[in-house]
Each structure stands twice: as C-alpha cells, then as structure tokens.
Image (cartoon, rainbow, N blue to C red):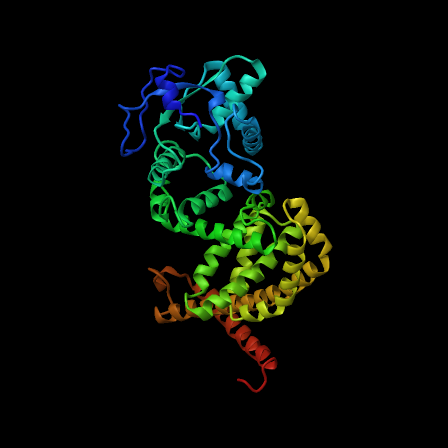
Length: 433
C-alpha cells in the first residue's frame, strides 16, 4: 500500500503552496500542519465507506476491491460510472469548469489515497486525462489518518460530515445514500460514532437521523425478506421506494411499544407492509404517490383496531410470496420484477384484501368527518345563542329590519330541515331514538 506522506517526503508529490482551512477542529492536526498537494491521479481511489458509493457498489461487494489505478483501474472505473449516472449534469459542469480555469477547490484524501472529499472533481479530472492524455493532478490535503484505526475513523467521518453536510457547504444526499451512511456509521459491533454524534456532525436533527437509521434497518429486513443480499440497497434506490421505508420507520415507532407482545405484532405488521411494498412495485407506484399510499396504509390500517385482522387476512399470501421470491435468485430490479410477474395471482390477492380494508376504513372515516361537520355547525349556533343572538362585536343596531327578517327566514328553514333530517335518520335507526 502506498503512503502519500512518504511520497511527499521523497519529493514525488509536490506542494501547491496553499494552506487548508479546516471546517472543524480535529485533534492532532491543524491548518498549520497540513498542506495541499498535487497528487497524480493514479495514486487515488474512491472511498467505499462513503454513503453514496456504498449504495452503488453494495451488490458487487464480493467482486469489487477498492484499489487505485496503478493496482487495478476496474474499481475506480466502476465507481466513476455510478457517479456519472447519479448526476451527469453536475459532473459535466465540474468538468467544464476545471478544463477552463483549473481545479478551484481542493479535496481531502487519506495517506493511502482514499478520497474523503472531492469525488466529482476527481472524476472530472480522470475523464479529462482519459480524453487528452495530458498529465493531470488532483489537488488535495493529505490527512495522516487511516480507516484501519478506529479512533481515526471517527475523525475522518466528522470531517467528511462537516464538509459535505454540515457547516462548510451542504450537499444534497440521495435519501437512500444518507440512510445507508447513517446506518453503516453508527451500527455494528464497532461503530464509528453514535447516532447523536452523527446528527451533530451533519447539522441534522436527532429525530431525523433516528428515522433514517431505522429506515435503513427496515430496508435490510425487506431485502432479506425477498431473498437478496441485505446490503443490496441499490435495489431500493432504483425502484424509488425509499419513502415507503421512512413511513414504516415513523409509524412502527409511533404505534408499538417495547414490550414483547407489542414487538410480535410489530413484526407481523412489518411483514404485511412488505407485501404492500411488493404490490406497489408490481403496479408501478413510486415516489410521492408511493409515499401517499404508505401514509394511507399507516393511518387507515396500522393505526386502527383492524390492524391485527388485516395481518391475519394477508398472512398466508405474504408468506407464500416471500417463499417464492427467496427461492428465486434476485440481484437486480429485473430479477425482482420477473419474480413478481410470476406470482401475479398472489400480488393480486394481496391487493384485493388491502383495497377492501382501505375502502372500509375510508368509508368509516368519511362518516366521522360528516358527523364532525354537523357537530361544528351545532356548536356555532349554540355559541351565537349564548352571545344573545350575535357574534363578535355586532350589535342589533347594526342590522336593518330587512336583515333581521332575512335571519328569521334562515332560522325557520334551518328548524324545518333539522326536523326532516331527524325523521330521515330515524327511518334508518328505528327503535334507537
């Protein structure tokens, strides 16, 4: 493994003369002890621990080994293609800017060449080199840290968060990438930092970080449920269904307690909801529409007394669907769609049950809304009566005789309509008045 610091000492890597201004304080380093270097592209490689990159390479973990271009350019080539696909217009703008005026903002790399910040700039420089053949350098600060050291990993992550999401310059993160980054950084047997530390470093509310963490957890459970690798997050990203897992995270936390019985019902609800997700994918509902449907599911089924009945009603269908998909080899969206098409009858059966429960819930909800609207009208008239027949700052001297007569007419009409409605409701509820 190379050491950029040793190469710098040997004179192989040249300083630019610029002095970095760190966005946060890091123990052991400061702007006074760091320099910006002109680093040959061949010594660098993309950070597989970065949330954006980790999502893209998740299904290829066994095939892709992080390496610089001197060792094996296949890794960098693959990640570069992902970054280009993720935001081609932004990469094109960066490339044009660098070609015209040079690299204006330096990046951050580790001693072994791992890029902590500057993926898009590095990608643009690689493309320019491949197109022109001209010697090209990536200007970056070399941090004396390694991911092999757990204490240093925390420092690296804090700096990365400060640059990409915090006080320096907030960049838009795809929500799946963000959830994966939060989960990978704060979970496992040797987490880099706590959830609270991540939220603080990313200038994010702890509640949001917690929801994203659990969203990533449920993504993993869903991926295991359909028989693919639990880290195959690209499948979620491609199908644009992140919102479904965020809504699941919020609803389960709200509707279930921590006792053993609640946890059993929570897990049953989670699997029923996985059936709902598969149904949404099969019928092509994604994005905001999927989010709205998920909220209907949570509000009209999960948060009601019918939740357990619904779970029982779809249990066999969901189990059969899971068994079928797990027997298939699902790695890509095409594999998943093929599996769902083959089990169209099960998907349809689930959809029929779901539609029935949702329709019944919404009908009941409409009745409640109707009753509440009548109740509010009655309360308004009672308030007017209690105020002597007036409202607000009105006085009877403000009304003309014609207006008072008009009000009397409306009151007689209201009285007559009320009597007729009272009789009408009685016809549908004989013996209960």
